[in-house]
Amino acid sequence: MPLVIDGELCARCGSCIGNCPNRAIVRQSDRVVITGMCCDCGVCVRYCSVGAIAMGPVKAERDSAKLCSQLKEKLRLTRGIAAMKFCDSTPEDAAVEEGPQFWCAICGDIFDGQGSPLLFTASASMCGGCANMGLGAKRVTREEFDAALEASVVGEGNLYATREPMTKNRDAFPQFSRIHRGMVIGSLEHISRPDMVLFPATPEQLTIVSTAFAFETGEIVTGYAGKSTCLMTIPAMLEANRPVFTAADHGGRMFMRLKAQELLIGFPFSLLPGLAANLDKTVYAHHAE
Ligand code: SF4
Ligand code: SF4
Image 1 (tube, rainbow, N blue to C red):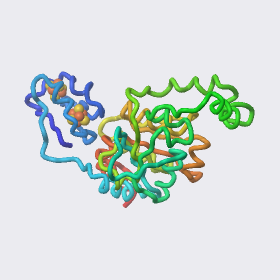
Image 2 (cartoon, protein in one colour):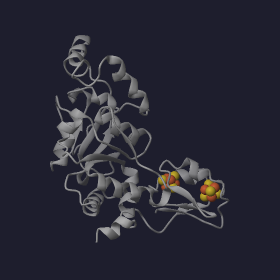
Image 3 (cartoon, rainbow, N blue to C red):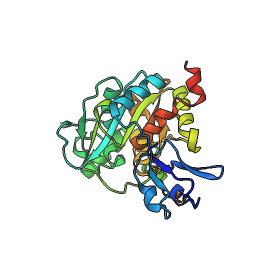
Image 4 (cartoon, helix red, strand yellow):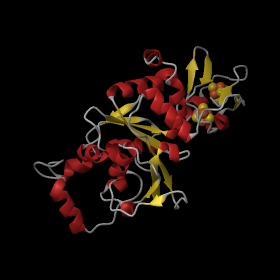
């Protein structure tokens, strides 16, 4: 918990509560307090007209490698954790994925233990999922697009009866505020300060995660089903700054090589230090001993 509120100065106006992007500030009885979900962004400081918010004595753990090992140990994860970071130039420490490749297949490699950072772009994408991830649409001709739809997406025995239901439910997800040139994707221990993480988990592990997330703030983890895996995970984490879970879709499960009992959990990185710390505080921490 990097920032703290001076209870003497605080006027309990609630301005900071409504403006915290992590929903990390809560009312407890007659006090306003900053919880462990704080990521030290400093936004609340600007909204406090009485100057009641200042740096606290304790820093949250934000080292990617340490967080990765903490999550694996505390949740007893058996698969890898994928981290994603948007970028507009090519980072020196990432190989360039030339493609054609599926984003979900890269995630599958990371879940299976291959974690070196890769730069993934719309031009390397095998499918239209790049548009679901804020990387822009892949350029294809009208004929190629129609052929792909007819081959495996619309019609009896495919994903949608017609094109109309395929496009209709896009409105259920946040729209991207900007389009990025690329995304570096790799194992969490290799990517410093990513934008978000994604990992396979059992329903029991999801319960432990959601309990830890709700512990101080009462916030819940919401899930999506019925659309592409990339769309059901990335926009909510990126644009709404919210954790998500999903059962993924048919293709995503196949390329990610998810096991029958596995779901996917996605977390904005800004919420990960609080999650890792709270995993020690709930009823499940005692059960695990
Ligand atoms: S996440 Fe940012 S806005 Fe929220 S409490 Fe922490 S410093 Fe303040
Ligand atoms: S904005 Fe400042 S005065 Fe208002 S509740 Fe937050 S800390 Fe207290």
